[in-house]
Image (tube, rainbow, N blue to C red; front, top):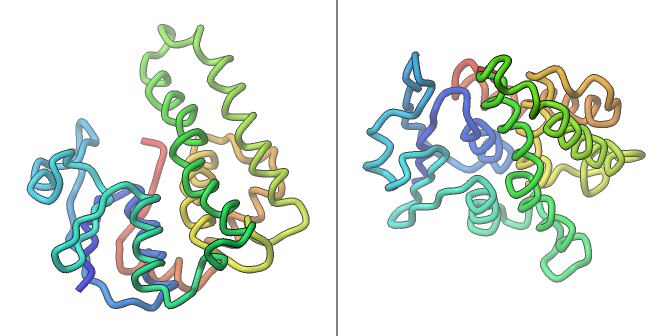
Length: 208
């Protein structure tokens, strides 16, 4: 049985969504952030030494890192769903989006969140960080022009992986100037599987 070690208000929400899209049976083990620090509880370290979420256990296999989890679950439990055929040109683009989400696009958004907490002390860093956020959101917006999803007319794991970028961008008030990305995120949130994952995973809010 697939077990998702699920931390509230975190990247693990998109793993629940993926599993709903796949129609794969899974269980949730819930973990709550510390109300003051917003950090994951130490119990997660019993699952993986980093003590981070998401982590998935599947029999004897433990997988961490969102991109790796999405890739693993689609390959092992997807029955050909949610990814282009291996070896195709679209599959290479798909892999780039899987890595790009956390490797590049999330970095300025995370920096914005941390620097925001510095108050006036972080003010000199804001122009550079916000310029990078705009750069990445513009790239996403351009990639979505004329298509419903990142690879065309069909949802893939790349959209699920990139959804967190759009959600955090929206939470920080950065998405409004990007109509293609805004419509894409609304389209993702309207999917029945996304709504089912929210019902199972609990309330989902970002920006804190």
